[in-house]
Image (cartoon, rainbow, N blue to C red; front, side, top):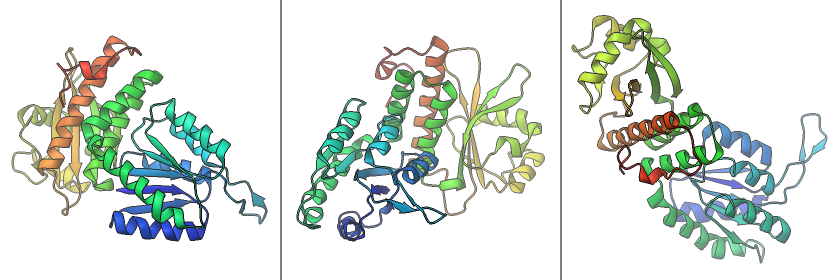
Length: 326
């Protein structure tokens, strides 16, 4: 898991690192001293494998490439960006700036985010006391809500409320399962539509692309396998059940195991969810990964169904029990 912190004071960083190494050994801690840099990083990596975000507000100016001092932004800027995303991470606000702290709390609270506030005191003493206890409380309390199903539903609710395009919601769901599988770019997930001409066209994907690299010549085989293997699990790339040309293509792009699942909401069109693994250290057939794939498949079906009905702000995602079941 990752813990992301906006803090430019090196003494505070050292104290925070000591606390986190004691509480959550093995967690990846990422520090930022510039608001915009933090936003760009989070936009690139996504929020779905983050256990906590901690925000200071007032940041010292930083030297730019030309040697001039530049504004580093503030915690409010990060909060304003966060609330445009699904509320999937608890946030701890740690600033002595009362006005800014209240502003960040207002932003987070009015957009459904879980948050808490601590006010620094006594040098770095507060970090080993109130910050430590609040970090632990937020992470432990939020952990039951970090499954693929729960986070995916949050992504859907956010997309519906904001009127986001279908592709944005679908990509978010795929990023959730990619983050929870912890395979990095070794795992790839791709949703493709089957057109009226029996050709698969990629709609959204995360990780290294598969469909474009496998090629249209494998389309019919991919669909046939997806129907035959539904609910069975992944197929080794060198399996004799695969046509020789598909085995060659998978070998060429480094796929060691692949799974095809039909995604079919209650309408006349099929889509295919492709899951691919390029690492011998990872196992696509593990119970956890298979559970995550089943959950994301249901979420994708729900997203497609909602889109067909027309995105509405009053849809209660949890009531679509006929399509999605936790």
